[in-house]
Amino acid sequence: MITDAMATPAPRIVVFQDLDDPPRAATYGEIMATTFQKFGFSGLITSGAARDIEQVERLQFPCWASSVIVSHGYCRFLDVNVALTVGELQVKPGDLLHADANGIVNIPHEIAAAVAELSEHYIQAEEIILQYLRSSQPTVPGYGETVLKAKRRMAELKESAHSLLKAKP
Image 1 (cartoon, rainbow, N blue to C red):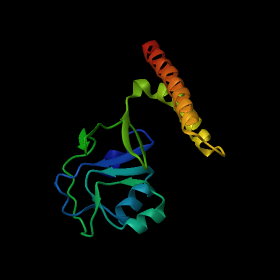
Image 2: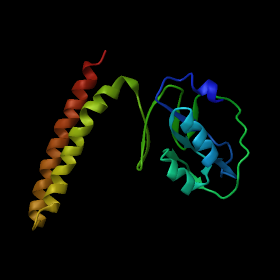
Image 3: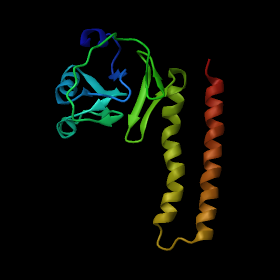
């Protein structure tokens, strides 16, 4: 399975679809996470359950699961390098995934450059509101004005995003 999965260009994230619903045993734990980490994978995503949470956290190997379970798993791998579904997310080998504490998203390759180009600008637009709220004496009217300013900036960014997408072949 690892040999087959390594055929996908790096960086690689291993993605498992657990066919048990609800999960009856762990899809991964410390040994599986360590194995994938040692073979150069960047993280692990599953629709199944996780175990050995404290040990996996110490590995600093990012993992996402639908739940945590105490039961040891005896996984059978029916296939590798195939399209699958994790939660509601459709994933195919070679897809560009972004995963963080907020969840997982599949970014189409054709818009990846635009997403990268605009991400920091969206963060800065949100920062307009946060900076105001961190000020010494925010007021409700001032907050309203600040939110409008941030929304105008977001609208400009939306237009930039549309322009970038239209320019793509």
